Amino acid sequence: MKIGIVCYPTYGGSGVLATELGIALANNGHQVHFITYQKPARLNSYFENIFFHEVNPLKYPLFEYDPYETSLTSKLVDVVRFERLDLIHVHYAIPHASVAFMAKQVLASTGIHIPIVTTLHGTDITLIGIDRSFSPVVEFSINNSDAVTAVSHSLKKDTLEKFNIKKDIHVVHNFIDLNRFRRIEHKSFKNVFAPNGEKIIIHTSNFRKVKRVKDVIMAFKKIHDVMPSKLLMIGDGPERQAMEVLCRELGTCQDTKFFGKQDAVEELLSIADLFFLPSEHESFGLSALEAMACQVPVISSNVGGIPEVNIEGQTGHLLEVGDVEGMAKCSIELLQNEDKLRSYRANALKKAQEFEKAQIVPQYEKVYESIV
Ligand code: GMT
Image (cartoon, rainbow, N blue to C red; front, side, top):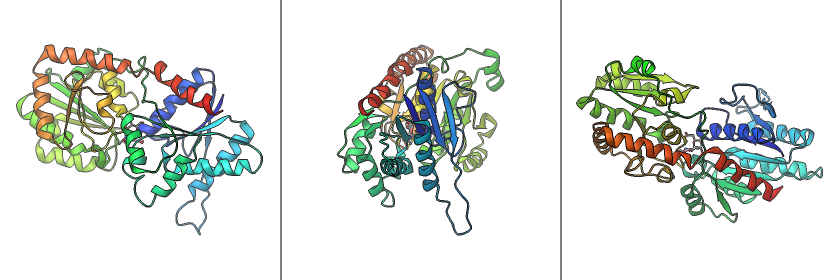
């Protein structure tokens, strides 16, 4: 098939997932066209069967806000028409689902039928999708997609509860490439960060408020008070600066390292003992899955789709949102018990194997086949 993929090209979970899906589809013999305003972050080498079409919103002095949606619609119309695409798969409803609907109408007026698949990722429903400034358009464009997928049962449930949805929603979980995300024992690399055998805790995110990065810092302080430990913070975003200041105030900054955005996350995950994900909303938790694939147990909140990935008492622990005390307590217990830690590690890998890309990607292909 010839598949157009629209996504945010950044380090956010929806863009990462969309890019990995595109790569997997190309490996399965499909021709994949990414249509977005920048080359997706994970599309960092040459891939046969993958093409990239950059959207350049026209600048004009009259526009206070560049009409990105109109430029994206026009680009979609152009690519579908001239590359003869079979379908468009949009990731993250806002604004991609309504843009795809518009492109479909424009193409229909020229006699071209293009089916649309919309994948809901999380905050496009749970956080900003329900805001009145978006909700009528989100609901309309979901109902007018040819197929809709959600990344967890929890997100499907939320969508059905919050909107008047007439379409069937297929649950297709996030997936992982276990060839890339695997634990690579690298003692000398670990020694760089933990020269005296300190325990290593890691967090990766886009440092938005919804991730509750402050809980990571506060829980680490409590752990750090009782055992030698290091905190590795990967990613960047609006909360980063404030978190660096907080570490200085708490006196943990010597043992906390902010790396910013990283491509080879798996190398850092491979030296970690625990992964923290205390989010307020999390429709799946791709970052937790990546950690688990590298045999890192997860200490997380118990919201959204996280319990579909992180299993209490087996692959990690799940706590109420904001329970910093609980996060610290169960982390200390686990870090002090080598046998338990070893068994959680093995369980984490076993659970991650359920989300191997070879199991999940065919589920998307099945959805495509049903509408093309
Ligand atoms: O918050 C992020 O990490 C980015 C966000 C997005 O939509 O770009 O991620 C969402 O999609 C991921 C891939 O499907 C999910 O694994 C994340 O759980 C989800 N984030 C939230 O729901 C907050």
